[in-house]
Image 1 (cartoon, rainbow, N blue to C red):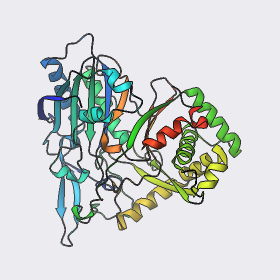
Image 2: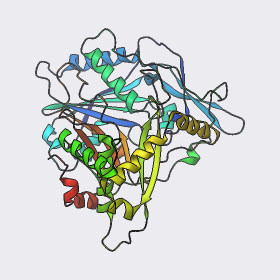
Image 3: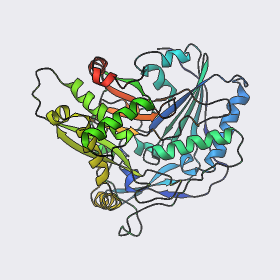
Image 4: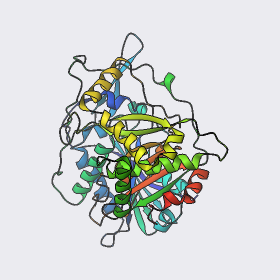
Length: 436
């Protein structure tokens, strides 16, 4: 592995503190056992600016100014112990600081990252902070870790953010805001909202007790032969999938994203099978479903606001009944999650908290979103050319969706066992929609 040399490391705080404390909701606490969100963006090396001390200082200062608007990310988790051996958590906005690292990987070029068929995780993971950290460890670890890595011909800016405090929507809200301040904005275009949402019948103090988390740590899981490949689907190929799914299902309700999810789910299931396996088992589907538009929550709501929805169908029906059947099943799952359903799920969770565990048991899990403003994250020297993730999502069955570099397309970062991905390359039905 090519060496990444750390040049400097420090903690960056905010200049002012808008709030002193941030409560955590059921949506936040459910992610305490898993890893931080790790997303980074790749740039061509700036032509108009030299990457020197002043360049790095500018990024540090702009980060500090951005934390003025996002003070929880400069804080730490804090606990309130209870007599029954449970504990309640909140964010102490104590300005302990976010981690900022400047690193150099002079032997690594953009082509080393983008040209291999499979994402070179040994390289990419070295660009991220807070590796192998569980979110509940934010009591002593930074809630935000940033690494700016100089490459031979490019620059990689990676953010790792505690998933118990922030979800993908808020993550990109922060990342976009930092880029605005870096470009010279005096303020950010959209302010975060720190008002918490709880069901109206919840306890008035709204602190949710959790059992001792160290005793509930999930078993150690080694990804093994799991690899990651980036698939680009053009606007045109997605439109064809959508039209086919709606035609087969005799409806007009299936969206572009759900049609693509169905296409991926069926192919993944086909390619995981051994030829002599009986087609009798149930195959699972998992998807993050947002609460912001369903509750609804204020524009700019900061924190987690999504649940993980699950469905299962018979394998033979999934494979034999076509794209429309699969897409309709996913559409039904999404449609079930009305405002009332979302509120009921939170109420039930608060009575009996069940945390997501990093067990590696994700049969097929669609996460992230193609509507995140990834390519609008311009720090002042041009837009990103690619997005990549750290090790936190490298588990068999994880499908992370992002906007494609071409308008209207969707990019899927598929994490699967090597043999499954190799079989998908020979799956004519799947590859027909894939844009090389």
